[in-house]
Amino acid sequence: MIRVCKMLPAALLICLVNTSIAQQIKVSSEIQRAFNKIDTAQIKADIAYLADDKLKGRGPGTEGFQMAIDYVTGRLKSLGVKPAGENGAWLQEVKLRKATTGTATAALTTNSTVELKQGTDFNLLPNPSKPEVSLEAPIAFAGYGASEPSLGYDDYAGLDVKGKVVLVVRGAPDKFSSSVMAHTMNPTTILKAAADHGAIGVMICPSDSTSRLGNTRGGQYSVIGKDGSVVISRTFYSDQVKVLGLLSYAVFNGLVNGAGNTISGAVAQMKGGQPSSFPLNGTIKINFTSVYKDIISYNVAGKIEGSDPKLKNEYVVHSAHLDHLGIGRPVEGDSIYNGAHDNASGVASVLAIAGVYHNIKERPKRSILTVLLTGEELGDLGSGYFAAHPTVPVKDIVADVNTDMPTIIAPLLSVTALGAEHSSLAKQVDQAAGYLGLGVEPDPEPRQVRFVRSDQYSFVVNGIPALHIKYGAKTADGKNNLNDYVAKWRAKYYHKPQDDINGIFNFTAGKIYAELNFLIGYLVANDTARPTWNSGDIFATK
Image (cartoon, rainbow, N blue to C red; front, side):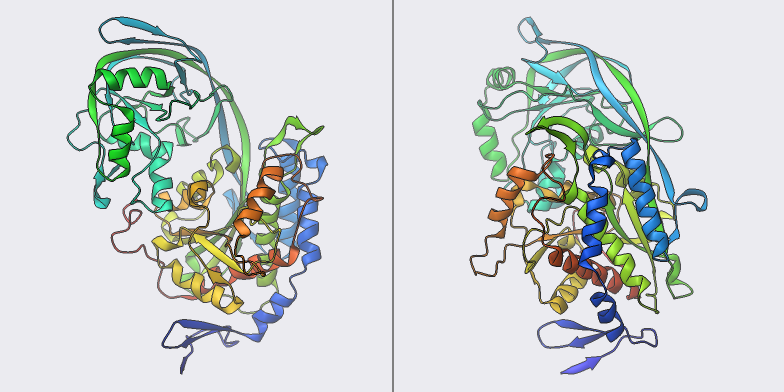
């Protein structure tokens, strides 16, 4: 065995050990002492405060969310973290726009013109940029709406959609990995591909006759920039694509059959990795209005300065979303969606990481940003805004380590690192997990498409390597079915008022999450080389 120590500060915080199997880390006694000081009672107290009824679910723009801001800034100050928001303060303003669809009409012309019925035949998502939209255009079927030539799949190859409305179904070829599948199925990715090929509208269609038409009455949120334009949205890409809507199976099936094809045949071909796109006989005419309500919310940003004269101007982000769902539909007599696990626990973990830094003298080479985000529950909006318009130069952010609902309900014996497989961050994950005796597994729940459902995805699509640590399947009894236990827990607690401090918790697992994410971030911050995307990876050119 050859022991190789990196050139680190005098305290010799972390050494690397080369073996024939893998590179392992040895953590200094100073860091281990700081780990020992992570207080599970403090983790519980942080969660309990943030999930208290008096914060009323921490909805963005509410008094309860402001109380959460005040609490976390106070905790960060007490841990020696410096403000890193706008104008030398703690906050970054995020203007959220709630858009709802007003009046809407649609008509389809094939051999004759048929008026479509809103709520039965179609629904339209609001346009956050244009309060009134009118269009009439030919239609075409563009498969999954995916355009990934580097992966050998392009639904738009050989299909002319310029000036057309494209119909797409949700899904991805079987050969796509879970994270790539989740990315290509994301509405923003679909909208971008449509815009890149000249389309002016997208209608998402069900491929199953038993599927119901989706409901769009709840409205959609976007971020409005300082110039009044839409800068972040999960349902809007550009002014070119004026319409994003839903079409019923009955209408869709009639159009596909009219083109001499079947939905089942097209989907089977696409799942096998072969696109099945074709023009449709007809045009669609759409008119609708959108109504807006703007809300001011905030991201909270803090900084722990690095030690290297040059590299301290680069940053590793530890992120977690601070918001939850606020007050909503009562469940078992309770209407406050406290969000104890989702995501008071993730915020508590970031605070614990700040506590580790507070208890070590030496700093890593790069600086650390603790960023507590708004609007995750509305579509990763606070992170989308921060990743694209950070309070430090965007080119200087080298990585994001995100914590969202770590689900601390059982002993943590293995983890999955969503997104790490796309970049060199997988190395730091393996090293940190190995030190803590944790296995690293593939995503045990790929159908949950968790990769695009939290804030690390915002950093990824802005070209910044990022990951999100979640539980693996390993259990102490050897059944290795933790995901089954979590599924039962999720059915009772996830996005329900019952997710409060009185639920199921394993605070020791919360401590281990904080240790793991600290080590990942610390290793990245101390490596003279920036994290890189894997060669040829789908996100390498984002």
